[in-house]
Length: 106
Image (cartoon, rainbow, N blue to C red):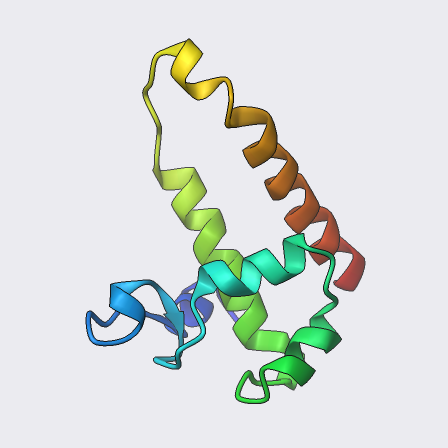
């Protein structure tokens, strides 16, 4: 499945989860799926916890990953160094955890 096909699985609707990007119009925000992965949950646990997610090749979870990758690649945050310093290590740690978790499963 191409990255464009994966991105089609992520929808934004102001009537669902306050307009947060969600998986296939369901009430599963991309952010929540990524938080579970960052917290150490396996993909199998996620698929059990959220039965509406599609199991075939874990497409919905791959879609969350692709969406976040594109968002991180597209946005640049320009702040003063002292304003960014307190959150940078934590953000980098979460991204590292997500990436290492995904690498273990694929």
